[in-house]
Length: 114
Length: 113
Image (cartoon, rainbow over all chains, first blue to last red; front, side):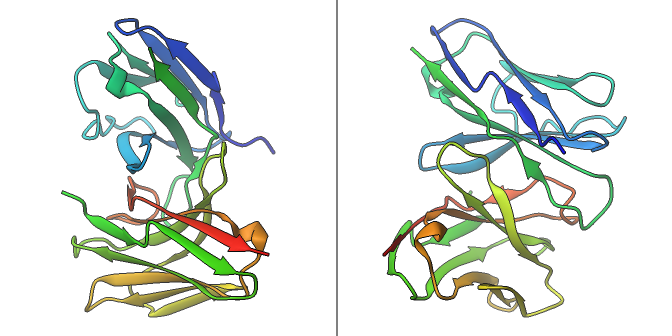
């Protein structure tokens, strides 16, 4: 079966531009997460969607970051007015509903801000 | 505030040796402790996980040891192989695996042939 799919795999853009990153979770998974992986900083939680509940946005670093999940499936992470410190790998994960089920990660989008 | 501290940052082991990576946490509400393995250019993949009601869990060559009173847990890789060379992350969450994870900063493991 297909795993978590993220696109694009690489994105290079100029400072100040807006970017959209896409995540297709595993079919049937109700939970979806976005993390950011910066060099030497490990993975940092950004946002969490669970079914129809209000998302947990507590990890978003600024109001330039937003995310949505349409129809309980595909999610888009948007970064407005990108800054150089936004350069990182953005990882998406999904998991089935319920406890004891692990998160499955995609291979990420490597974002470079020039 | 770093809630999960991981050490060492890097580790070099000879083939057949034991690799040991340690993590310490601060939040006593954490109740799920997974380890992830990540190869270059790939997303992290769950390796093994433990809950605080047990002190040790073994899956093949991989063992998690958990010390609740010390708020520490560690990953042991027995008979380390060159194919184990990767970055390893410990993590923790409150409310089980189906919620946001707090990660350590990772350990780059190199297993020499």
